[in-house]
Image (cartoon, rainbow, N blue to C red; front, top):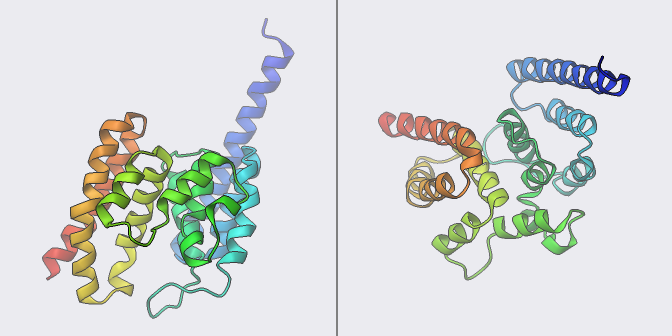
Length: 227
């Protein structure tokens, strides 16, 4: 006969899975109605973090929102900039990258460049600080070296690919034709090789890597055929 403790654990897991399903459905419905809904994304990540005891993510969420306050994305819609790291984090969760360090790095990946914060000052552990530091472009470091350094860190690699996937998805609305052409070339020259290195170095992410490459290449090929 199963122990009471085992039954309790099983019941708790069922409750958590059901709650997860509910918040995911609410979030997906919200995305259908309004793609750029900051509050829905914020609540989705916050709820997920609380349910799974992602203490670092719970701490980082309000921190990131405050740092990006008043900043907006490029494009006519003037979308709050915080939408971007929130969307990258939501994309990570949707792909099953449900790791506290990964989600925290996804949320923080732009703060050092855009908010003048040093990586060592971030309210996170050392692995997350390291990943964010690698994702931050440094003066004097060429693009190839920047991507090579990122490729040596699993968290930084996955966040960079998620970041590029999100930017590729929205560039038609916010970039000039010249910028789109430049971005396509850069993606093919340095981001695809990063993906290739990740495929060999991080086989535990093979499913996520396939979906990210499929998404990016589909968008790029559609844009190239449009001329």
